[in-house]
Length: 204
Image (cartoon, rainbow, N blue to C red; front, side):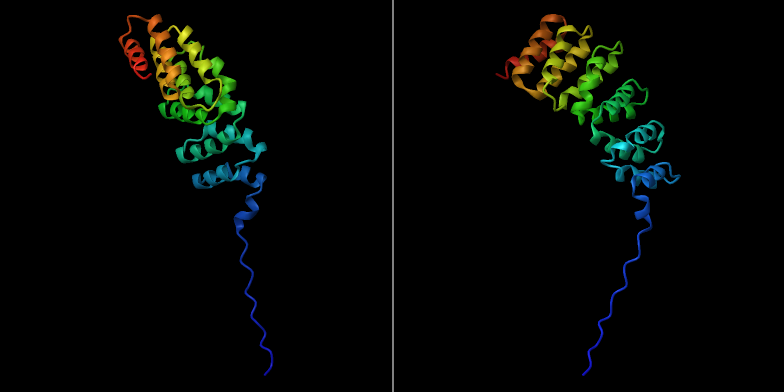
């Protein structure tokens, strides 16, 4: 009985997107008319450092929220000062969605956030200072207690100071006791700060 030649399976068809997945192709795809194509391109550019300027340009003009979220996801992973600077500008935006997106993104960028927080915490815009304190509430950075202490010691707005004490309560009981006591001493007529001080003292 003769040998039977085994059939060879045909090679799988090439994925036409493979040619677009190189950085140059993905950068072009980032400007595609189809939002889904732009979203895919943004995610596929993860880890491509040279794509950061194009991603920053895209996130400034993108109107589709799903695409913008994808661009932000990729940018946040780079954790760069230039990304944080862009997001810092969003904290003063009239669009609450953009403001909240900036807070969440900065919270995930310890190195980048550190490069903008000193300026944000002393800006003349009370809302921006409050949002900057919100960033501190979950930021994984060793300087967080010092930033919060500076806010409690010097910020002229009682609500910003209260936000700093609230943030301290999420981080450490000892820090919360220290800052709530200092805040209550600075603003003895503020009932909320007095309440926070009493609450923190009872958490010993």
